[in-house]
Image (tube, rainbow, N blue to C red):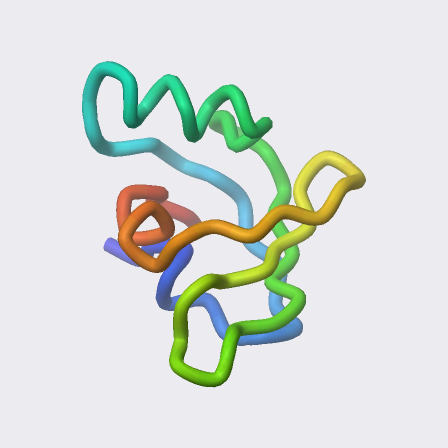
Length: 73
């Protein structure tokens, strides 16, 4: 299983599934990260957290822990 955390800077991926439950899963989906969404990894902070991505035409920074819940292909 490959997660968003594993995607390298400059690569794109497609959301396959979002793990987690309840409010956490809802928060991720409210940011526009839903099944089938294309994600481009723009950059990663020097210490690895957060990760800056482009999804649905806007830029977003998410924590490494949240990125680990997003399964991609």
